[in-house]
Image (cartoon, rainbow, N blue to C red; front, side):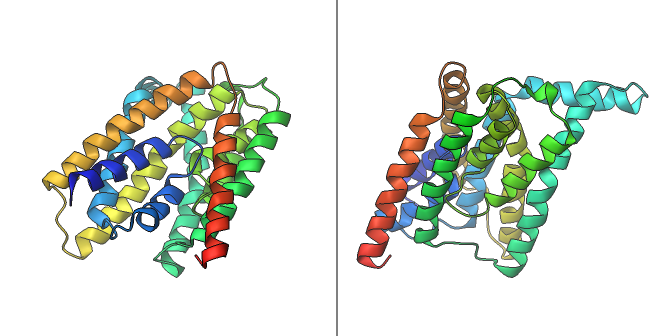
Length: 268
């Protein structure tokens, strides 16, 4: 695969996985816009591994606290860190169930450009509404099981391309009154099993078909996606300490409207 193809795919995945603009929607659009062939399972796995590495590196302190909390719980010491770890596990379940059902009954996924356009537009407005009306009085430490499950159910909706996994989970968190920065923090940590699961599923499909994984192209894609993902995380987490989601909403609405205009005018 040409290096420019690898770089574009990795950068698109790395940047849009964490920004609330839908990585799956953008990856659906890339071959349509640029006229490229499908990148294949190996490249999908590679860019997922890259972004997974980025979020683990950025949030290693939170992950360490939760693992330490589970260890202390195993020794009979109840603590808030272990409770939060269980909340993240509970929030992952709805997406796992929905992903299993989608893979079973629609193994090819949803690839419609029109679906991407409508999801970009509709969920963009929903993010704006949640951000404008949601209170900013709660942190992750104030969450309960209901909050975690509600965000988890929202994450399951992100299987629709154009929705944005990070966008819909942060939307749900803002409706629950969680601060912007904290909403992003929960969403990003929650992405670890989601990204890891998606990558593992793709790797398993590739294994069943006898595909080869560790190639120079794949390693390059991992590196590019890691750098892009880490940059996106640093930017987003710093941005939300002092600003809101409006620029991402404007981008989503403009892109969604453009996609729908082109799709309906020229028949997809």
